[in-house]
Image (cartoon, rainbow, N blue to C red):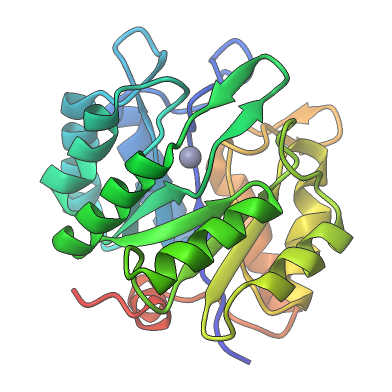
Length: 273
Ligand code: ZN
């Protein structure tokens, strides 16, 4: 059985200290948390930053500081967001990966209604530009899929060489406006992607654990962290992203598999650095 890439998403765009006082927000807090998660076994870090008020942002200075500090501390695979929130400027969404050259960056493969109150806009024009720029920069897109139509977008862009082959998918289940977090939906999404693809999945909130177990059973990789889920167990707030990483490592080991080291993750994803 091949090894499992364990991604940690420590921060995300939305979670405030009021919602969970342990969410890392500043570059220093994020870098320390990523380092602690790496020590606990995480292979990859999906990184968002905030502005200096803690709000969702594609703040280049804070990306630069965070990435530098993470790189000084450890060799975890760095995966930068290219959304950062809703309604942010396209050039601000591209600049961090363009300038900082992480090995991976997220690629949200379509537009959707978000949470019944907003729109997550990823226009065809933007997706073409994003795919081409990532290829120029040698940054591997992690194709974030919130709904099945987004898979078909990626198949079109793969055909057009706007996305590189083989693709890597991240199924994001349970965002209101997207597909709900059910095992049936995960099985269906997996059936749509090319046979040479690698993939990972997670469920939002209370569906975190069912989707993690289902992803492992279906041969996928997994993601944990406060971007997706702030409760360690029902009614109990997580005290650290490290707790999620440690639990996932235990689950992977009980599953008779092993977590991929960052270098093993690079091999699995075909990262050329
Ligand atoms: Zn994200």
